[in-house]
Image: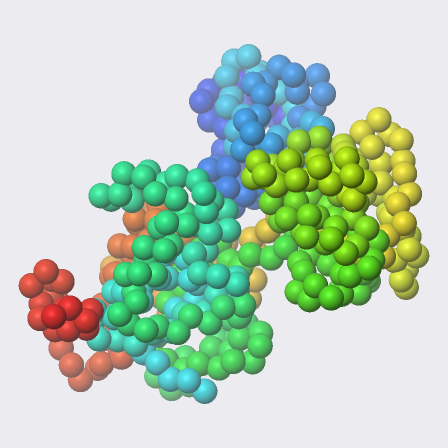
Length: 106
Length: 337
């Protein structure tokens, strides 16, 4: 299973194995990774699963749709490498992915 | 204090359908919502987006769904109290008393919480100074337009609210529109109007950039923004107006002594009652094994809750299950002859 690393904004990190086909958000929720709220349950209707994607990975994951980019406007402190983790689907090609959770979600 | 049979908290689809289910059983209800219009998430998050999973409605938007529900409950003449957030819930014998942030009070034997994911509140900017200046020179909505006349205004955001207010306020104030990326999301005519005003020098547009500081603590004098290429710029500003969308906060619900599972309320799936007798939860805010956050599930949940509400509101009457198609009583209540 692909390994995904979740880092907090303070630099603590945790690496877990996430099943193919799950989203990076679901991987976090199932493994009780703090810093990802996912209030809407993955339907792109909130921005509380917002993460920053490590620069070396950002261009390797499929680009965000318009609706996701619009929703990121509503996130806490969006940056250029912001994504909603519910929209990043885990596959073998993402083995080693690193995402950083923001200081807060709301 | 107003007395009713059921107080419904939340005017989203589930709360509105609750009015219907209670109404056909002959129960009176009132609805309270923190937003300025009914519809909940359907209106706030996806008024124009299609919904495909309402039974027998192949496609409708959030706005259409809300309008249809409002039509459906018209016969019951139910009061919907908007811009009111329920702050307090307390027990008085067999009844519950609900108090809002504007000090309105209601009493009823039943409460149905159909609060979605809690109350919507504007997202604020995270700079410390912004808090001190809030409601003086930092705002997240326009309540009184006069306050925004003949000023230097910096508007933040890239969606409809930011664009609409930029156009409106540019009629009598100097407006700078700031957004974190180059694309704005709005109706086509709004966007072309915006570009026209920019060309005419009526609106200044700054993108892609974000705010880094508010200058002068007592009274706002200017703001500093930073572009993506690290350049910074100071913009003389009297008023900052931010439209960063809404965030959903569970709010006071967490303090009412209900059994919670994270941000949801645990219910008995037989009648959707919480651990407190006479307080029910339906829709996205309730949780039970197998819960699905679908509008149609919420409709089912509130229908079952309405039966239990009947038993509590009319303890001396026997509840009789009836179909709308064949019940004369229900048709009378719906004003059908």
